[in-house]
Image 1 (cartoon, rainbow, N blue to C red):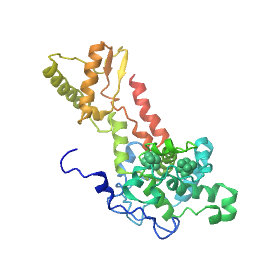
Image 2 (cartoon, rainbow, N blue to C red):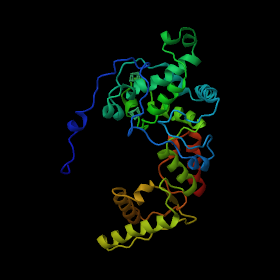
Image 3 (cartoon, rainbow, N blue to C red):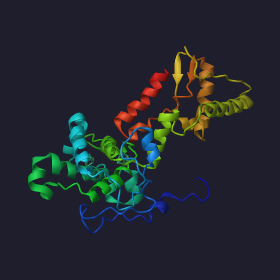
Image 4 (tube, helix red, strand yellow):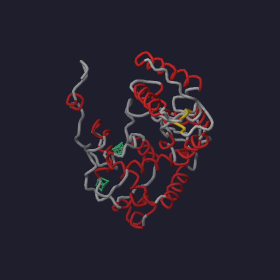
Length: 315
Ligand code: SF4
Ligand code: SF4
């Protein structure tokens, strides 16, 4: 471990794991500086044709939402309950066993109970019960239901953008409830209201326009790979000569663009460049579809499909 790197117990010693004195429904979201991303800038949303592109900030009281935001949200939620059977199932079957409660790194790192996967899901389940179940419509709070108010929408945004969709919690759930999938669907609904983060919307726009999330231009990709080839030659004495955008190659190789740009990914790239050379593979790189990750999954299923299509089109 590098000198000066704090030990795990030093990092967690200041985190308060005691729940707040008030119930989760009565504890409004506190947009703590440093715990949320900037709102997506308008140009990123416009690049991919997403609605309600405007300047806004999550900590502002006015999010500049469309007047009928509630209607849009609930209609979209109803559509997705019909479209994704998993979503409907995940809204109904949690038994609150708590097996997932301490498995999320956001809970471990903040001590905030709403970052427990079980409670993160409960935030949207309460809205589901209010508008989509008979018990919730009749019995309200007694059936675990609550109104979709602006405060609730903000709370949903705050906590659903604090999930990295890593799926760690689902591994521990005896029912296989996949919080990552719930997160994807809730974010899909947010994007109908222009509620994305700058960090996600930027990479999505870059992937759409340039083919990779870093926004690397074709000549940057080729010259970065040239640097790696120079290093390989210096170490091994072998000059590898990969091809770019070559028609007729047997394999179109698409890798995470970070491998071409930053350590330690560059070492991985050097490794597979040598391996492919040794195996004599007939492959080529695309400088236009150059992102192995799909940033669309942080946004919407449709966006994921649109970004995937760039790769199949190149192939
Ligand atoms: S999928 Fe989301 S809620 Fe589950 S552990 Fe990962 S970050 Fe936490
Ligand atoms: S492990 Fe599964 S069933 Fe248990 S509380 Fe978490 S989501 Fe619910």
